Image (cartoon, rainbow, N blue to C red; front, side, top):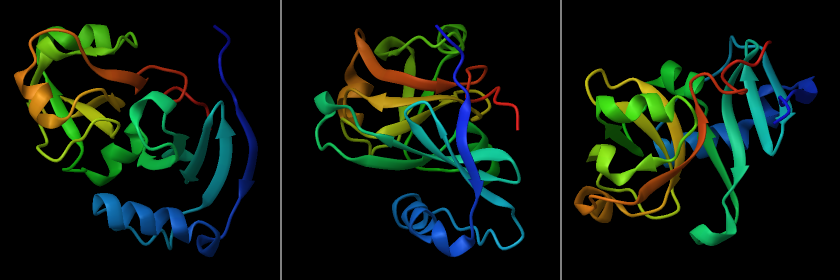
Length: 172
């Protein structure tokens, strides 16, 4: 697989990306004024990125057709999650699942230990380490929170971004 690169990168003013920032605040409770941050937008494969001080912080991605409502989803990248300490839209996995997730594998239900109770099928959620609570990957929820807690086999999430992938390693 060819390595993805950032394309069409250009600086933007805060008022241009206000809709993105308002969506983050409304849907995820992220509050950040970005007044002292150099903002850029760029394309990265199928993702549209918002960069702050040359670091990809927010991505806009289209929800897959098979997961319900089709449309764009605005969500922090893993680096954005590290900046904001998000406490919604997460699931925690045990130590055994981490090596597989770090290689881009989908998250299996057996590895999921805890889930944010507000997750619904088709949500973009982040996966954290059960012990430390740090983000390690993110993906599309294939089950709602109740089903994810009860399931003991099968896939729970379709992974799209993880520590060590092209987006994580992007050179700014």
